[in-house]
Length: 470
Ligand SMILES: [Zn+2]
Image (tube, rainbow, N blue to C red):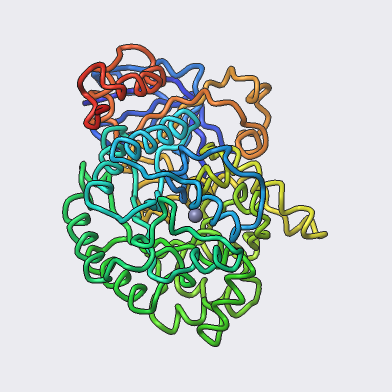
């Protein structure tokens, strides 16, 4: 399958503020074959897109979310993480296979329509992590066409139950049953995860991958953390784990480990370039930042969730200055209420200014764009395959309609993307060979319209939904 996008403008995020136009991009299979001002006269494509009104940019990466929360947006007011966890788990009902399939698909639609072409889903469950649950969620990613790394979330310390007890409440009567946090033996959980990795890791030509997802050092035993690292190593996979989201976690982990959690993780050999660490808010000392930088681990900044839960501000500028890769995430929609990465970009660009009086230490637009693209690719462990538009890279890209009000007049593309981009008229193009053929069957019209039809498909009317209503 050959696709040619002709005469578009190409945003080169490795040379900020660089817009190359006119530019033609040839995509063969899933990869960018060549980029040139003029296509060779002899080149033939199966399909040609007139790009004269389009700007091509690397697909954005939502490097941290929780797909079950796509059903939980607008369910809580702002409150600190710890009571918020109790409220969320306390009100979450059980999720059937169909529920989680649709919840994933709902988030995917929102992401694709707003320029996200890859996601890391730290997938939790209100019940045990069963093969059926994991398969249903991952099948939705496979069916949707988005690139996904699914990191099933698990823990074995009764953290939320303890919080609930401290608040004079109990979670035992809720769908958040004890089985999910404590009673599933580690060996049993590892067997489920191993089978899951065997089935899904690098499936669909590598578009679907599995990461390990221990909830956090404060929620997991030493054995669970080490077993997770072993599993990731065995499959050459990623290790995705919340880190230091709140001051409560900072205090608790210092009591448990007798040192900062970063130093403990480093001592245990649990850090490395395959590790991505959502939040990392309460890391403000030079030693921990140097240790993270030396390890090659990536931090995922989630500004919307950090604001709603009052967690604090991750020192992303200092981290980047010390060479720590920083990616951006929306976090789950129960704490951020949407999966629009452009909003995370805008927040990341703006919320840190009031915390530091020196404007020289504020992030500029090109840095924010880098977090959403190359930073995200690093979190995915795909820095050499996606995150930029170059020949040989995966054709994960977003086409923006340059006639959109938020892009007019076009002054500085990086600044438009970081500060101004708000609406959602994006056309996602990804994994082209697979994606285009599938979309062509769904609808011959504009790709984004096809996504709007997916919920109808999932009502079971067409018989194609793998999880029709019972
Ligand atoms: Zn999270």
